[in-house]
Image 1 (cartoon, rainbow, N blue to C red):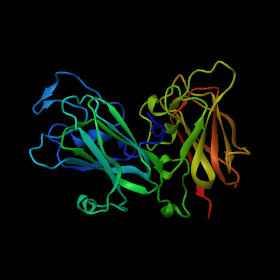
Image 2 (spheres, helix red, strand yellow; image 1 turned 90 degrees about the vertical axis):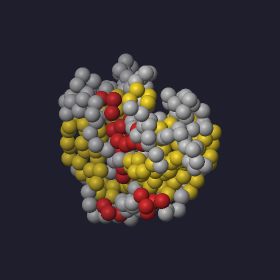
Image 3 (spheres, rainbow, N blue to C red; image 1 turned 120 degrees about the vertical axis):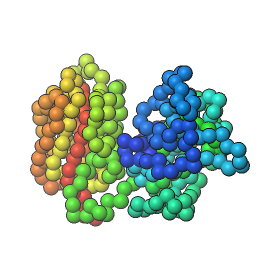
Image 4 (spheres, helix red, strand yellow; image 1 turned 180 degrees about the vertical axis):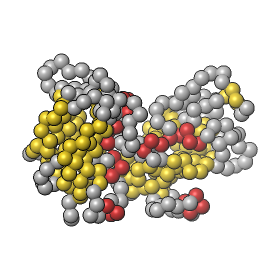
Length: 317
């Protein structure tokens, strides 16, 4: 495994990704490619088309072509690495695959995407069955779509496209937005502990359906407290904070505080230590006009958060 897997999966369905088209999906639907979580499998479970797979599987080709699936990234950005997972596909995996990317702004149709300019980001590479394959990407361009090509046919369980979110924030000029949102380009850059789940979950879109979709730390025994640092979408002034402990019934923190910094050093208080209740959302007004680029969320002494929202305005350039 390489370091890029700590970055968000830009193609993930729960982050807004979609498999908008595929050359074929005779045995297993294309949408499975970007589902969250590890692929599952139950032996000897047969439908009308054969063994059921948690992945995308095409028919056996009898021509010289190859199959493909076209994915709209839920979060456009710079791709740092790709994972092609052939989990559970042992006698029916594709022997080779490649990945291309394009930048198509707005809401293009499939026909328009097929005419777009596609750039190879993963060259044609050998695959093995029932395995994850990790590919570093060295390309600084911003992309909105990727195309997975498999040669000639077969099954792929998951496609992961890890990278850095690069949104277009121009439409928010003069408007309030969530400066801590992953979809706006924010990122958790460090944290004290991520024993149970990733800290980047707290800035993901939507609501957490269960506690695994939030951030949860191990139990502290040293008298300290846990924390995470969010690099905001851009320098801005925070007006309101939402601290959500939904689904955290017996493992919510007792209290929280927020600190801000323009450069990741020289921290000052945004919200003093304030009591939290379990399994609920909390909203706090934030005073002052000092712009910040980084926010440290301190939880006392440990526990979990479902979401953190920091509403405000971007600093005028």
